[in-house]
Length: 114
Length: 112
Image (cartoon, rainbow over all chains, first blue to last red):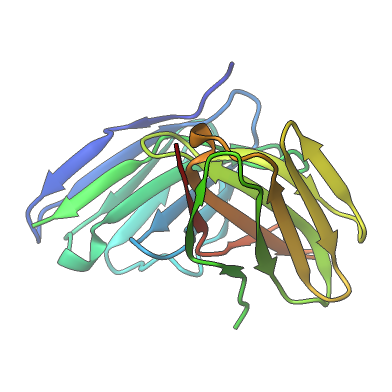
């Protein structure tokens, strides 16, 4: 069964350092999402790509976060500099252009900033 | 502010018990509602995609209903098993946006 690949699975970084996460969606899925889930809260959309274009990054803290999907396939989410409050689970998901069958999620990256 | 609320936040049930929980969402401009199951150390898994008022969907012992006019969906688990232990998330989308807003989830623990 096709999966959304994410790496790394866990990341510990010191505050003010840079950190990057990678996601490879299901082949053929045009839409890719990055979500952040802080403990005790629901997943919050950070950025949504349609092919290589950003269609929603309204909740992305653009002073420190950046995301790209250059060839419309895999994607990288970067944080620079990391802050203590960035500790969370970062989930990547993909879907067809209209998510009529729901999202397929990756296993996530658990980030701890110390 | 668009709120999707889930209740209860967490619950423990005994093996064999049936249980249900609620997802509440804005009742206007509804597009779709998703239910996901998220087991520890795994990826969230899509359970149901619901789009029509009155929809009822079933997968094994798990079923869901949808009421878009009053803005709620119920998820039912019949005869809970320990492997049903997970966080159950719902996600709601407004018409024309394709953007899904997640609830905070219901954490279910089924005790053997």
